Length: 263
Image 1: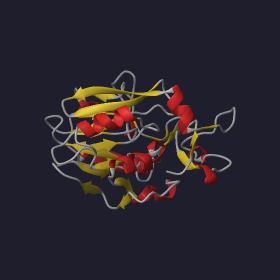
Image 2: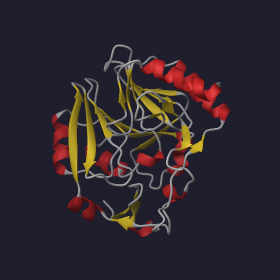
Image 3: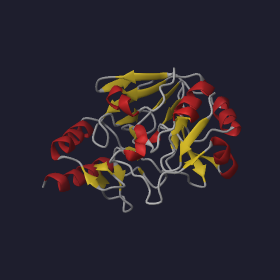
Image 4: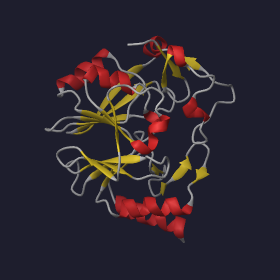
């Protein structure tokens, strides 16, 4: 694999001979360049300073985190399925212990993404596990390195297996998506990235164009997001970090949240 350079702010990997002056992901209005300026790191330094932590959330669901937190600090979620395991979103680190753990659970049949902020080192993960990466075509322009395993999908949903589906939501990014897993809860579970953001009180969901920059979403797009979620059955929610879990009154919290946007 070619030598890589990593954006320290968002964790996106670039080929070492194609590094821009500023990270193109962070230059977008939905992310940011720190006041201290653009900084970069390397996979070697990342492995030296950080490790991976795995936590069991459910008999068929694990979270995978970088410890201590690096860049955005998102987690990846590993869904175990008899038809093949799915990695939802990605973290910008992969080590041998994690590889062996996932292989002991049956490997990966697919990697799927909520949006471009979490692409990180997706090509490395896909190469190690020899599996496709599913990204919505609406976000194709944000892929900084188009690896051979990347598959762009179109339309409102992509059915995988055992009822698992990737669903286009929009909002935060034009291709923002969720993973719907029917067998993790009675009504179905959504793995969300930050297509929705759950408040610390766990009583409100936000939908923004940019979360760090607090840029609101245009109301017509907000209405589309609401209508899309209204059509999806779910009673359990996992967001981009461990505090973004909700398993009680999820639909009610969502409905009450949306009233605040349209009152």
